Length: 171
Image 1: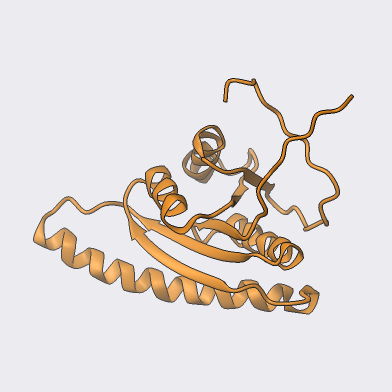
Image 2 (image 1 turned 135 degrees about the vertical axis):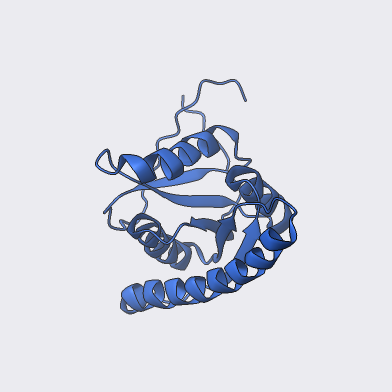
């Protein structure tokens, strides 16, 4: 006798972006997955909060504009890389927000009703970046209100046939 976990349909996928090759790979993976699931994608780039000073607020406005430009370029490169493999290009929305990365992701999920997070993770070879993005990925896996699909560095999309769900049965 098997019991199955009933999961809501995935219609909206959140992809946090740090402009690394790892997050670019996660976006390409999410595009192919969204195509299969008929889902849309939210790209989210999070800037650190300002300290409230006039200088910090002024610089933040510039950083937001730069972030929007980089996100547009990131989108174009990702879409171009997989466009020949898509049946229907998913709708993609881009967001640049300020705040703590994990808290901002959780707020975004609540506001936009994302059903899945797709994040890349770095291998052991890049300690500096892994300490930033890798630790955030692992903490999100434990706190996110929706499933988190972690895409290892360099992993290519494979159509999903089954998923292993590990739990300690506390939630």
